[in-house]
Image (cartoon, rainbow, N blue to C red; front, side):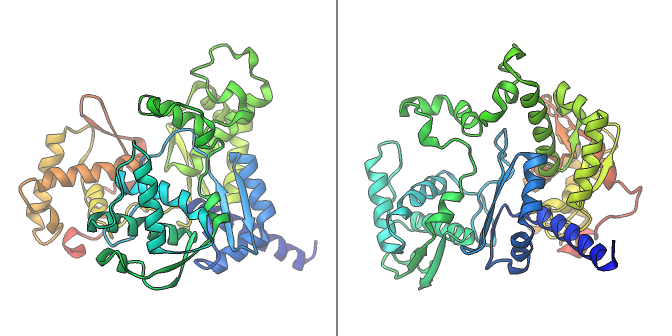
Length: 417
């Protein structure tokens, strides 16, 4: 093999690995937001699509002329750690009103390829008024207009809406604001990453509140695995083919590896654990990590994919940019073993006293309690602690990665104020 051929092979492997990791961080990729990365995905779409299909069972859709790529990531359980967020400095989570407006607005956007903010608001107002189960959208109320703008800006960030004229934010101050949008209906259809559409479930409206968990499970049910994807519901395995079983085991394990910070063996089913620790499973682990550009870490308690370039994640830890993450790191270093909520509050109070210029929003009467609560959200989301039913907070094995025996892994709080 010539040197030129070697270089081309290395270049392709490098680009495929980068494309895989970029799509994990941004499953909906719009060309205008990341033209260089989109070009890699466009040119290497076949090997990238094969990687996702083989290891995770996910479909990659690339539309070069329309300027977007969509990785259809299907999870077997809802992920509460990734809510829709407002496109503001606070990055606050969507509330119920905003989620309702998002669904109704998305439905109404199919009416025309070009619309104004006033016409769209009118259609949303009419739709909510006709549905007795939805709160009416009141465009005369500033709070409702602000929620509506948050929804529109989120859709803009997805590339579904493009502002042709005007400023979306101007609608907050006046419902007579003039804003003109272009609608990408094709991209709008790609937003929902669910094998089964909600309208196909055929559940009476009155029963929906009582069967939410069941409905969510049905939305993400993938029929190609048969009963294999529902082992708890199907104790009789006679109807499950060996092909379905192995396919489900491979996809369910690798989905967790690329989506979760760490995969602990005690969180897997017995079949998943056996598959992952088998010679075949270990071989696939190393191959997937190599092809995806990950460093594989194997421990007695579990495994994880580490991205040396931190491309594949939308949230990092440690991270000095957020007070809760700094507090999480500092509190973690005080936990030599399980800790009670009271012990963590005392540690947080000591930090707030020692560094009075740091974490100013937490320097109130309930500041230590809130700081602990926010820090624990971070630690749980990164698989570093587990809260037991008794309330005891238990550090998990991966937490040892961030203990440095007195050497700080981040600047002192007073330097990040």
